[in-house]
Image 1 (cartoon, rainbow, N blue to C red):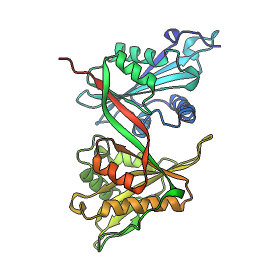
Image 2: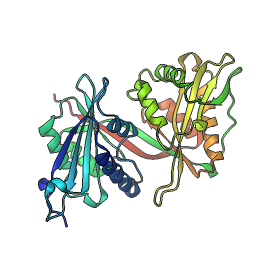
Image 3: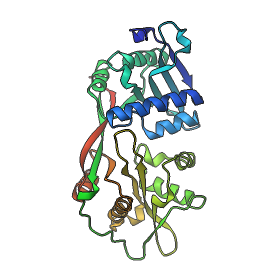
Length: 323
């Protein structure tokens, strides 16, 4: 049994990278939450940052709330009820994400974490993601004076129902898979240029790329590069396969599609998108999904024409401006 009130449960505060045991506890919690919700509770980049810890580009603050056994020392509790992570930039802006284990929901766990964060850091410069935009998250945000400032749509298509046109590449352009140890710098340059105004993707570093390449899901065969006759990288479609977990079957993802500024307007973006989807179809996956900003009208229109429909939504919350 556990005590009835999260207010009495211990909050462990970690500045910088988390140790192996806490990272395992967090991953176990996230697996249970995704099985329950069908959505990840924490972004992939945040998990990468938790493993890596502080860097020149950001600092990390993690608050973990444990639910101890009733007769045990609270400091030795084994059940992670929830955790909150703040990734803070050098300008002291930051992004908060919270995950709560399904067994401990509707008990005030998230509120306990937020109040502990308020005591530790405060909310200055802080925004927060709600993955799946659950009603409880919206209510919690409103209680602290936060409102939606950004919507990230999750769109999905069923491959068996897809009727896609052929991927027609511009003249002189061909596709090949990413080669680890050779293509990192070229890809980073194109990614940075293609997403110069994107708040997350455009700022990816060599360390971020290396961390993703170490993940179990990474497969260079599904990391497609578009190159010209001289071998220069003009664009890419990085696909991802989410493995089956529990009752949820494996699903493909249009992880990221990017085109160098000098190749934009040539039809390369659409061709890359189609080529990546075809690659995922050929793996036998029943569905393909992707993320896109709700206000990115050209992208939303393209994906709808290809057969994608809105499936779910992540919402970023920020403080309501006064006056």
